[in-house]
Amino acid sequence: MDETNRQQLYDHAKKWVLEAGYHIKDRIDDPLSIDTKENPNDLVTEMDRHTEKVIAEKIATTYPDHKLLSEEGFGHDISDLAGVVWIVDPIDGTMNFVHQKRNFAISVGIFIDGVGEIGLIYNVMEDTLYNVQRGKGAFKNGEKLPNLEDRKLEEAIIGLNNFWTSENRKVDEKKMQKLVRKVRGTRSYGSAALEFAFVAEGIVDAYLTMNLAPWDIAAGVILVNEVGGITTTADGKELDMLNKSTVLTCNPSLYHQIVNEYVDLK
Ligand code: 2AM
Ligand code: CA
Ligand code: CA
Ligand code: CA
Image 1 (cartoon, rainbow, N blue to C red):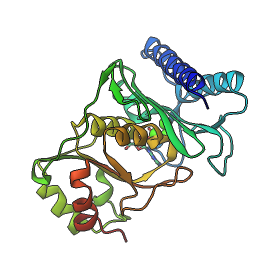
Image 2: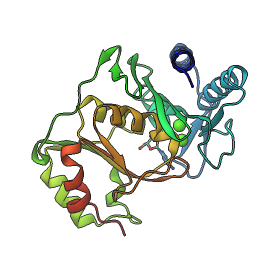
Image 3: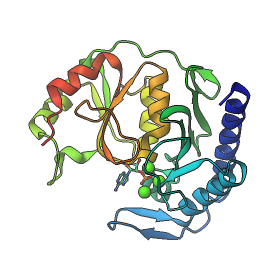
Image 4: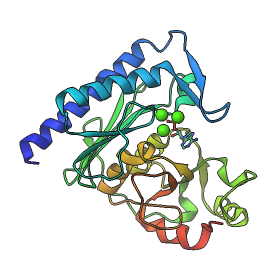
């Protein structure tokens, strides 16, 4: 893809993400139609579906040869990353959307022949846009994000949810307790895309979680990568952008220590 087409692709993606965000913001106080998916806490609303549908239609009309991998069923059934693949989460942080009416994001990652090229994470209610074009810098509201600085684990804030305390945990909980005691603090924001954005911004130093889908992480991986961060599975293996997996995204100065000393997957 030549430079002009690449820039046009980015401009379209940005426009569509912002338009979708403005639509959600306009209707944030409307009554919600809420369903559950795999369990009573796994929520989806009409707004999740509507947002994905609108973005899917724009992609299909403008770029009929592009593929879409997305959460709510308007995408394609894809088995590889050949060509241009949009990886879209229309609302990341649906529980926050429902309960808090804030702290959720639209996440769009675009991969070309398997390489993450374009990423957009839009914090709708804060009107904060994180964007990246590979090799051209990562930005927050148009301001370039600097490369991540070295950090000691004792002075780090890490994003964690309660995966390590649960009955069917996949990790050695003693080691996780050690990690929680070692770091300065932990946070749990409830939107994987925003946690990635915070790692890229350098206000959270790592984010570790056990079960994310490609649409939760696609844009975030590209964004974090651009500022020198590292993203792999929790046990240090290369990420597979077609399947769910454990995820660690991290300041590079903490990465090996966390993987080698603290994460022990069962
Ligand atoms: P969602 O809101 O798009 O579903 C919450 O900790 C984060 O995990 C959110 O990014 C949320 O995305 C994601 N998430 C929630 N339930 C999930 C599930 N069953 N599998 C994978 N990711 C999930
Ligand atoms: Ca969901
Ligand atoms: Ca998600
Ligand atoms: Ca979602």
